[in-house]
Length: 341
Ligand code: SAM
Image (cartoon, rainbow, N blue to C red; front, top):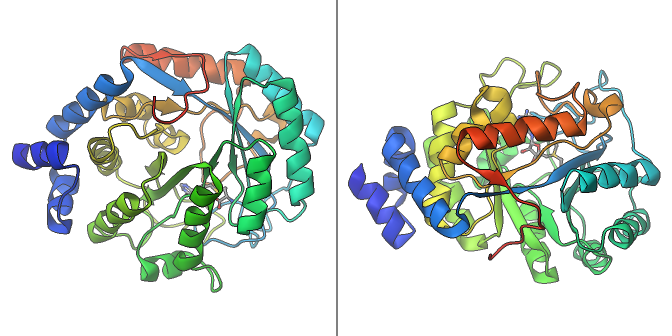
């Protein structure tokens, strides 16, 4: 084990078989090595992003997702531009300098509407970064969003295995198209984040090893890894959630592979385990993403069951996370927290 952790640390890559061994056996030694590497790059700093879930309308019907178009039980909402700006203002007061606009793939948000929103946020908060996470769009659309002030874009690749991708998604959604979007985003100039769920139905350790291979090829600035969590109104309702140790092992491997990567301890990880975010940081994560969405709509952006912080306000969510970070000797810093510190 030590050998594999050391090898990964030195060579930044392993064979598929070696990845599988480390994923399965990982544990404390792996997490400690990842934490050391993280500290050597970021010190005790934790970057903070304010998540604004601005629409739960979605034209896609991903098998695992609670806001899939086929879920007729989901009460749909959209935030107005004024509501989005007010979330940003509240986040700014709390010391947040990156706003993440995330939503379903909602055709209401044309390029024109998103451009308008991006410009207004940048006008009010020129010292802040904006991350978009609004799914697959054309390269032209990505370019317009970048030109209007988008800095970063999160688009999880979900799984780098084409058959597994097809099993998780309805016909029409392909891994090839997802990958093309990610490479388009890079070319356009965004800092890019890909990622995947650990424990998604049908996933094997081979698939996760393939994810690492794809991540090496894409070379993104950010990687979002969290556990799959079941949602009652989806085809994946009866599936077990992702395994905590496996998530932590995957985070640690990523940190050793890419020492400077921006790696969040996700809300899903905090939902899977009470100490999930802390454990994520102890395994090499360096980003947290408190929810800035208005309390009134939080329960409606339900990607999976039992999501945490759905009845808290932004200030409480942020102060809870700050406390969790203190518990593991980390400090949330005020700043954009761009890639390549
Ligand atoms: N529509 C955008 C997109 O496709 O990237 C952003 C919104 S989408 C809901 C954000 C992420 O939520 C997905 O990339 C997926 O990995 C995650 N997600 C969806 N359902 C989930 C579940 N049941 N458990 C854990 N994560 C889930």
